[in-house]
Length: 192
Ligand code: HEC
Ligand code: HEC
Image (cartoon, helix red, strand yellow):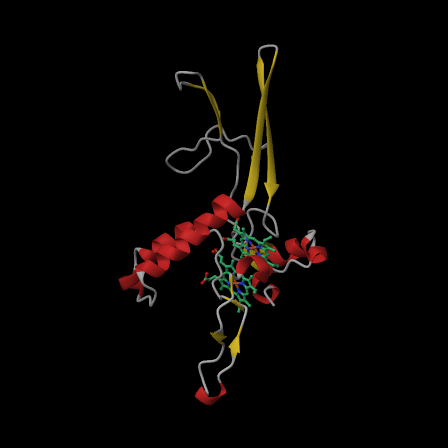
C-alpha cells in the first residue's frame, strides 16, 4: 500500500531540456523489501503509525452505524523532515494552512525523536597505538530501510572531533561551513 506512492522514479533533463534518464527519487519500499524486515513481518505501519488502544469510531458518517475499533493505528506519518515542518510552521498564514502551530510542535517533536532515538545506534570506541589514536565507529541502522531514505537531498556523514583536555580542537573531520558544505570534502570517502 505504501509502495504505490513511495516508489518514485523521476525523469531528469540534460542541458538541451531533453529527458536523459530516470533516477530513483524515493525507494523506501524497495529498500524495505530487500531488508530483513519482510521476513520478520515488520511492516511500514508498525513503525510509522502509532498504535493506541482507545476505542475509536472509525467512520464519521452514518451516526447509526458507528463502528468502534481497538487497537487503532493513528494516521500520523512522521519521517525526519524537521526542516520543512519548521518552514511550514513559520508560514501558516501565508500558506493558508489549517494546522495550528501546536500541531506542528507535536509533529516536529516526533520527527526529532525519529532522528535521535529511532534512526540508528552509534557505537564509538578508541584506542592508542604507538602515537596514533584509532577511532572505531559503528552505525546500526534501526529503520526499516536505508538511512537516509525518502527524499533524495538528505545526506548523512560522520562528524568527528578530537579535543585535548583544555577542549582545544586538535583534529576535526566532517565540520561544515556557512553554505552547508563539508569542509575538506573528500569525494572518495564522502560521496553524496
Ligand atoms: C496516496 C499517496 C501516498 C500513500 C499511499 C502513502 N504516502 Fe506517505 N506520503 C505521501 C506524500 C505526498 C507525502 C509528503 C507530503 C506530506 O508530508 O504531507 C508523504 C509523507 C510520508 C512520510 C513523512 C515523510 C517526511 O519527510 O517526514 C512518511 C513517514 C510516510 N509518508 C510514510 C508512509 C507509509 C508508512 C505509508 C503506508 C502505510 C504511506 N506513507 C502511504 C504520499 C503517500
Ligand atoms: C523498523 C522501523 C521502520 C520500518 C519497518 C519502516 N520505517 Fe520508514 N522510517 C523509520 C524511521 C525511524 C524513520 C526516520 C529516520 C529517517 O528518516 O532517517 C523513517 C523514515 C521514513 C521516511 C521519511 C524520509 C524523509 O525524507 O524524511 C519515509 C518516506 C519512510 N520512512 C517510509 C517507509 C515505508 C514506505 C516503509 C515500508 C516499506 C517504511 N518506512 C518502513 C522507521 C521505519
